[in-house]
Image 1 (cartoon, helix red, strand yellow):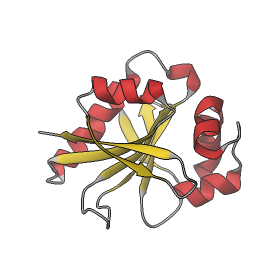
Image 2 (cartoon, rainbow, N blue to C red):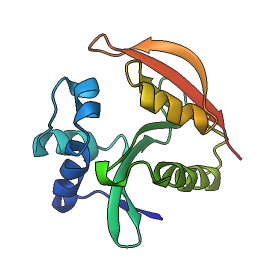
Image 3 (cartoon, rainbow, N blue to C red):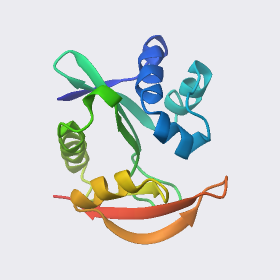
Amino acid sequence: MNFEVVKKETLYIALEMINSNPEYNIYENGKEARTLADMEEEFLNPKTISAFIKLDDTYIGIIDYLLENPKDHYPWLGLLLLHGDYQGYGFGAQAFAAYEKEMLKRGMNCVRIGVLKENKKAQRFWESLGFIYYNTATAQNGTGILCYEKQIG
């Protein structure tokens, strides 16, 4: 498994990944599908690192993260999402393990994530990987976000 940086010419792949998860889109944006313009704003910005998750030569997901959140100075994993066709096979845990290895190489020893309060499936997934809840925050749209962290290494 490896990561490939998202580029303008590969944004259509990101759109397919995101739109294969209508339930997530409803939690996150209140609508089942997103647009190419949404993808550009989310994945082609200077603040985060956005990459495809690849299994051999197959795009199976997308990951988006901050090396240092200016608010707390921790690395934050903003999104780890698999295409709907590749969920349930252990690829999410493998992708996180690859991300964790990358963070260790960069000298990080803790990673934080935010999970939408309604997204029980994501909460169970992250808790199964050893993430510990530490706080509840509120997003700009008023949605509750459960904050988790994991010591790595």
